[in-house]
Image (cartoon, rainbow, N blue to C red; front, top):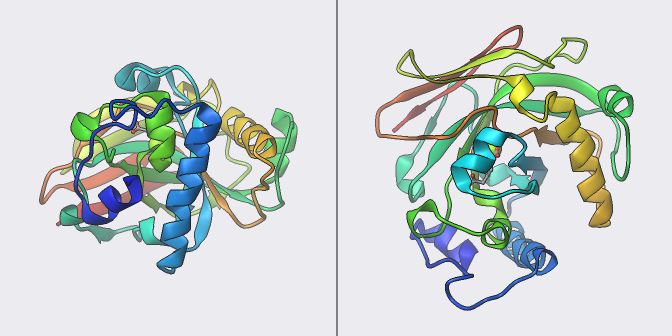
Length: 246
Ligand code: 0L1
Ligand code: MG
């Protein structure tokens, strides 16, 4: 149901409002079924995204726990590329930090282990597009909807030695700041999101493979996209990631 809504860019009623009283574990099962349909259409997993790793996002969406979901090849937009708005329902964009893993991760790790598992870091943009009416959902609804994952752009990879704990991040539409924040908004340090990603993967019996990308979660609230706008995140020390909306 949620995959069909995503594929057709047409909103549906929240699963919770349709009478499905899913547990969190069941919501992840629905997510997996939905992803299986993407894989049948030829998409591949490139990594995962973490969600609700900042207070700004939890408050904006009215939820109180972290979530995770796969990022697929069908969601990747080249840095400097174009995003076709007709593929989405009510898309929003948010500024993020991306990690590239140099070893597999799964289970309980500490901050130092997370840092040593990172080959490179990059500025990133995530486009989220809830498949539910009015972008409203419960925690289980959004997990079942693959955490609103829709598209993402990663800027040039930078050395993992860059200290990313507290970097200024500016989200711009046509060069005008629309959200200003700091990477510290992501759990106090984006590497904590990677620690959480490894733990959540371990709990699910999954491994984040070497070479995969992890999006740490938004540093600010998300901004609604509109036709013709040029979107850019400018992150201190890391540089920019950008796309044009067509
Ligand atoms: O980065 C994030 O916290 C994304 C959360 C995705 C869920 C949503 O807000 O629709
Ligand atoms: Mg996000």
